[in-house]
Amino acid sequence: MLLLRGSRWWRSRRPPMPSAPGRAGPRPPTPTPQVLCVKLCGNLKCYQAHFYSTVAPPDEVTVSYRHGLPLITLTLPSRNERCQFVVKPMLSTVGSFLQDLQNEDKGVKNAAIFTTDGSEIATSTLMGFLLMDDFKLVINKITYDVQCPKKEKPSSEHTTELENMKSLVHRLFIALHLEEFQKKREHHLLEEIDHLKGQLQPLEQMKAKIEARSAAKTSGLLWTGLALLSVQGGALAWLTWIILTQLLRVGIFCTSFIRNQSNSILMWYNTTS
Image (tube, rainbow, N blue to C red):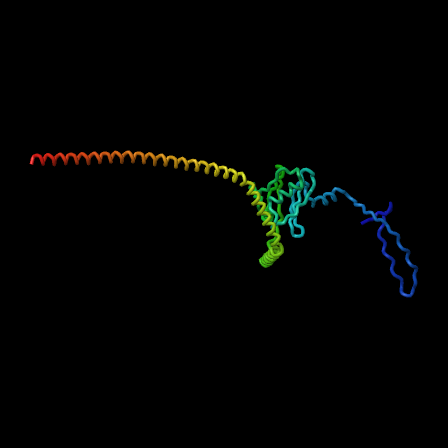
């Protein structure tokens, strides 16, 4: 490659050979620093085409891996800037990814993810399962075809070691954060109980009103029933008294009649005899 110094073309010089031992040659002068400028010769378009051939288009969504984690790069619609989202495959979901996208750019009104055949993917799907195949990302009614890089399947030994490591990390996390998790869970349950109590309070008030109204009606019906039973008992007693008095009168009349007739018969018998 030719180097340009000022307005003259020159080639790099070979450094001087060291002198023979025993001879004290003159000390070479210290070279002054030089600024070297590189000039590209030929058609510059070729270099530009070679430079931009490895850059993704500005409106393309790409998926790459950095430090073992997926990296989704896309263009924000409102700011027209490229933004990268780091995804945790076993923790992040489709819903959390879309929510992060909307939080990053307020111009994203609606976003959804579909499969290549047009089926919508649920928001509870883990990103690890999503990144196994290609998918479509729809942002503000604009569809982006996303191609996921194919990863080599790990061996069975590596998979077993990874599962054992995950299990160990999970047990350590539970052992270290169990008390904190229980406190958060208790606080969450207390909040849920307070919320349910607030929702049940109008129903409890309505229940108290209905119980008071039903108690008043029940008491009125009981007193009415007692009054009717008293009237019925008095009526039956009055009727019974009348019937008994009539029966007694009839009995007394029949007894006196029979006695008079028997006396008359005896007197007639005595006189005739």
